[in-house]
Length: 314
Image (cartoon, rainbow, N blue to C red; front, side):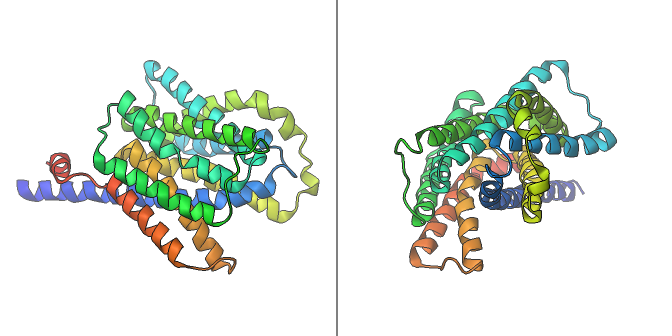
């Protein structure tokens, strides 16, 4: 009987890890679509800062509903400050500078600069939460970076000229901010329900974003916005902000920050698949090789060593 219970516990643990990986796949699929939708909305219909405030308000309301109705989890006073810091890096700096940067640079520039994020995460994880840095993880990050770069640069060339300098810098700060957020929020995710964490993080984020986005949001001329743009706004608020953040947080409860971050390399694959599906791109050997490199890189970072797996399941 004891062996049966241990077996069931092991299966349950493996199922949770599998679900965490599925959650990351869905989240990064959403992020891949978000690039196009966000560029459609900004800046013609809503200025970047105003759009961020709208995203934060929508997400805060969506997280508040299940928190107050079902979760009702109390946060210890000593953790409030840490969640406030998470709101700075995970919402305010992260979202404001990404949208501002995307508005000032090209999608290719933004995508290639964002590939630095897993590298930053693995370094910060080593320094802050003492996550072990292994040759396997380093190799996985490198292969994913090469594969993602091959796909991104297939659509054009990166331009670090003065025309895009500010936008590229904003996206780099955004990538650094989100990398730091993943590392510092990890202990909180392990301690509390993901809904609780997101409610507090977006609650603080709302306070930080108001001064930057209020006037832009008030100035929006809602009457002239086409119906298709309304749908794209709804997708960014509900899917990119609420669902993707919740999926990432749930996955982070089971996986390391490095594993969560390397899934960003799948976004160019999803974008390419969409382009092929819509008939605006085609499959070739370079894309196949890039996809293999990315998936193998994700595998190397995600899979635990045999010794580690035995320890986790024992």
